[in-house]
Amino acid sequence: MSIEAGARPADVHAGPAGGGHVAAQVGQASQAGQATVELAAVLPLLFGLVLLVVQAGLVVRDQVLVVHAAREAARVAAIEGDRAAAFAAARSATGLDRDRLAVEVRWSSNQVTASVRFRSLVVVPLLRRTLPAVPLSAAVTMHDEAAG
Image 1: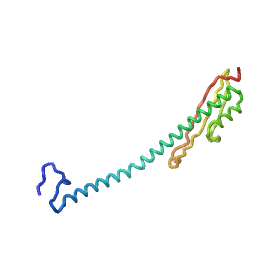
Image 2: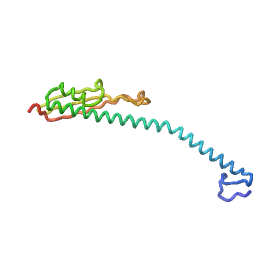
Image 3: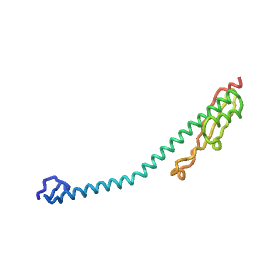
Image 4: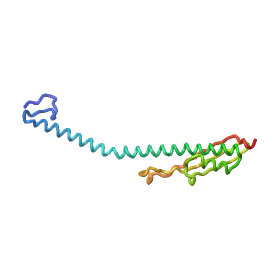
């Protein structure tokens, strides 16, 4: 058996008995096993990253709804001049949990400002224990139409 210069052990064939082929198959199985172990090590991290992205999307959605609630409260307060109507408008404008939604309306000269605060809870099961609720807020100021 002669070995050519630059040949790797997996490239060596031991003749008709095929002993070199067995060595090549063992090397390939070893590489496949290594790839499986690497995948098993990285897969939980990838799964956690996907869960974080989903939770971040839910928090962004809640922030958009908080801004919408503040805008609606300011609009109703500016048109009607009624604090209770502004609170009701903010609470009914979105599907946010009313128990975690705080609305404040202030008038100053010819402007009305509606501020909304909301605690966005972590809803992804595996992240719920590790991440705290995210405080969100928005404030919108409009010209007070009711004041004239």
